[in-house]
Image (cartoon, rainbow, N blue to C red):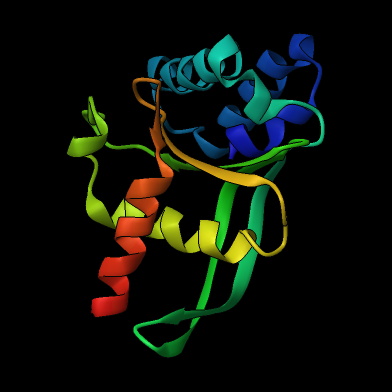
Length: 163
């Protein structure tokens, strides 16, 4: 929830907002656990590698739905993209994961996560013609952003079409 709401606030107000939120939802948590939760989110928001994902104009919790042709049959697909950032040439989609420990490489990522992003990317491609849809997983515990190349997304869709 903090990754959804805090990016819209000025950086100097985020800590206070996070503390207020954690005091409300984690009132019975030990103070150290609330501190760890905020530290994990702050590490992501303060990391320049992730800046474009949280830039003005990016959006959190974006619902998507549509129909995709899989295996010669139309399939209804719906879901929620955790973070969407639309640029001039690229549309970035990111799904947050809390795995402990976080995978080190794309090969260690569960295939279901890749398939989920593949479906989202396929739904968005016709909405943003002429732009590349770039997909990634953000493992919040590390924090680690693992990009999922188009070839992996295509392979995941092919597997889904055979299922």
